[in-house]
Amino acid sequence: MPIELKMPALSPTMEEGTLARWLVKEGDSVSSGDLLAEIETDKATMEFEAVDEGVISQILVAEGTDGVKVGTVIAMIQGEDEGAAPSKAAPTPPTTANTEAPVVVPPPPPVAAPAPAAPAKVAGDRIKASPLARRIAADKGVELAGLTGTGPNGRIVKADVEGAQPGAAMPAPAASAAAPATMAAPAAVPDFGIPHEIVKLSNMRKTIARRLTQSMQEAPHIYLTVDIRLDALLKLRGELNASLESRGVKLSVNDMLIKALALALIQVPKCNVSFAGDNMLQYSRADISVAVSIPTGLITPIIVDAANKSLSTISTEMSALAAKAKDGKLQPHEYQGGTASISNMGMMGIKHFTAVINPPQAMIMAIGAGEKRPYVVDDALSIATVMSATGSFDHRAIDGADGAELMKVFKELVEKPLGLVA
Image 1 (tube, helix red, strand yellow):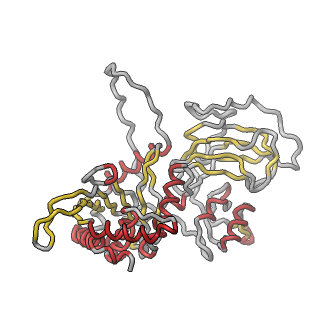
Image 2: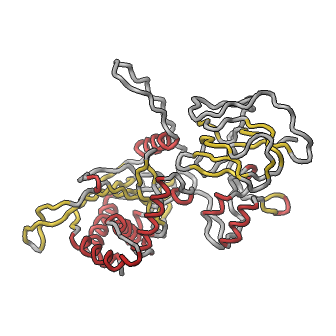
Image 3: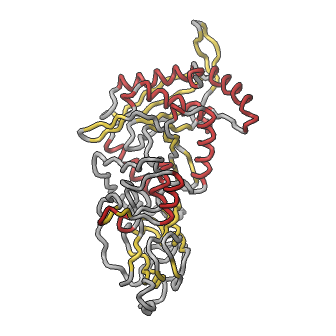
């Protein structure tokens, strides 16, 4: 019988996406591992690969359609041993990039919400994985047993393998402490006759709105601010950049602050946590999510284990991740997770601000601009380069005294920066 091709869940949190582009057309023969379509999630555009062989008999959702729920039937594949594909019930919907609502011909039956993914095994413990995923796993030395598949019927696909560590399965995402907050539809904005245009929200902007509303509603924020003298760090940065010039590496102040925050979290582990209802997740590694502004919104690529990486490695990784973020090419494992975040608006001249915690994390560091200010140095008033840093802490998980200890350690690391290279 025909095989239903359904909208895949390309990340653990994906609920819907945009079918950006079909890479096949009706009548094309496909094999397992062939690329079928480009799917735009709330964070990136990802490739969707086939897991079955056959002929594309019908395309049911036109490219450019957004708001396609995970599990929706988007095309039909006729098995190669089932004879010719049946005649189409209706013409293929026209391709358009400005579709206002999902176009489905004929309408697929209602699809139940997908059940929680389980390890990709079937009878006899045979692992279900696409050939491409198997090749990547073999190249990386990743064990497929135990990986959670996000492809059709729990099959392991490319995206599941790319973020896994060699020799071990990628851990399943931690369960949220509570169901995501449902955003109430805002009242219609009255038309006061002011000239305007209606701008449709991108998937990313919808996600930002939902998650930050959830954060402010669920997490009681506490804000702690310190002023930090930057002169020693700026001097060290200049010396390091002079020595790294031949390697094509140029450290930014933000690279050094990422390392300082990671080290501070290791020294004050009570702040390297997530609140989980009746439990607390205590992290033994500091993965720093770094806020990056892109045309469609905000995304937070992650520097994994930043406390144990050199400044040059952090700088190189951050440059690569920022470039991928701006091109919409980040993979889920590059932006999902993290144990704390840093947001730096100093380069835009902002002296002080408070940031919203990125759930399920329990803290975020907001960095203001460094500026010349009167400052007491060695009991004498002088002029120093000073910045303000404000930590936002989830008070359910982090007491004010522990947050203050983290800010103190962060300040010391920045003001005595040789500890960043020790």
